Amino acid sequence: MRWPRGFLPMIRKEFIQMRRDRLTVAMLVGIPALQLVLFGYAIRTEVRHLPTVVLDESRSAASRALVDAMRNTGNFDVIAGVSSRAEIQHRIARGEASAALVIPPRFAHDLKRGTTARAQVIVDAADPLASTAAISAASQAALRVGATRPAIEVRVRPWYNPGLRSSHYIVPGLVGLLLSLTLILMMSMAIVRERERGTFEQLVVTPIGKTSIMLGKIIPYAVVGYVQMTVILVLGKLLFGIPLRGSLPLLYGLSAAFIIANLGLGLFVSTQARTQAQAMQLSFMFMLPNILLSGYMFPRAAMPEPAQWIGYLLPLTYYLEILRGILLRDAGFDAVWTQSLALGVFAIVIVSLSVKRFSKTIG
Image 1: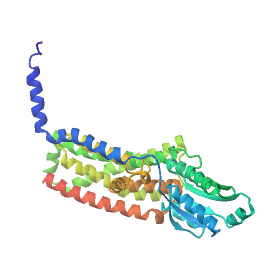
Image 2: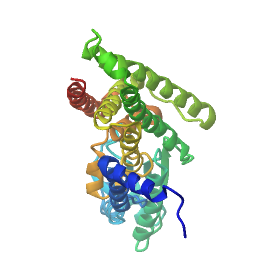
Image 3: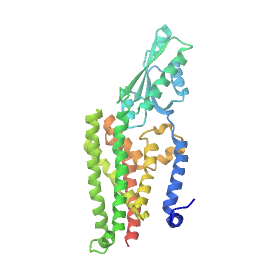
Image 4: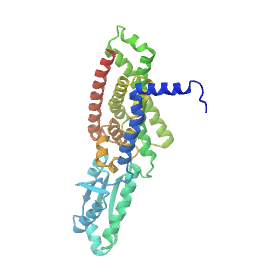
């Protein structure tokens, strides 16, 4: 068989070029392997160990048996007792608890009379997967206790998403996911593209200071981020009926740290990549962790503990809690201030590192 003229030399030339561009080859081979191992280990759809508070107004041996039965299902981790329904609402709105068990004062009395004793499980149904698991586990606990006692009925009351619609959970998260992906990608590609065209070097030798250059790059994309955010929220409301229960000015204000953090990541990527292809590959490296480990698609409570710790290193993890807290639960700043503080720290650290690296690059 005769090869076309120049075919083998062309193949040899491409392999030599690949050997010279080791970063691209390493990303093509190493990133998929790393992500396969990480996500294959981390992703779990069965939700267990939901943080649960208990309002036990009966304070009897029978009520304690029900609490133990709920705990023994493995789906509920009792973290505290509460004294009122208002405290239940406060803890769930703040994200401190995902479920609550309410045992009324007549619970033990009804059991002694041989009538049906009733209890209530309140579930944060903003996450349909977690709430479905909680509903099933509550029914199992009632059957276990009722096997040796008169009938026990556990009624489940889903909060914030009574219809268990997955769109109420996914669509608000899209605001954070799309902002993260597009801002990192656009920022990194814009700078690398100017380097490839030679216009960036011309910009550096002008009288414009390095700070002005960086701010001039960041601020327009921050405005684009807010436009994207507005479009997604409007379409989510019109097309999917997503509730906007909380304060939109508060949400927009707290989004600034998240937008700046992602632009800082894009700036950092631009200092590592030499070509637009490398910038795109490095930007997409953040996509799968953001989708799978931040809580956007799969509940973080179902993940192994090491995967949850990795999720804490993603700004999107904190922003999703802010988004869903404000939009779905009408959470105020007092309920999301810890996530806001974490995002602020991320923004400062990421931008500082990126600016330092960027200054060396243009210097």
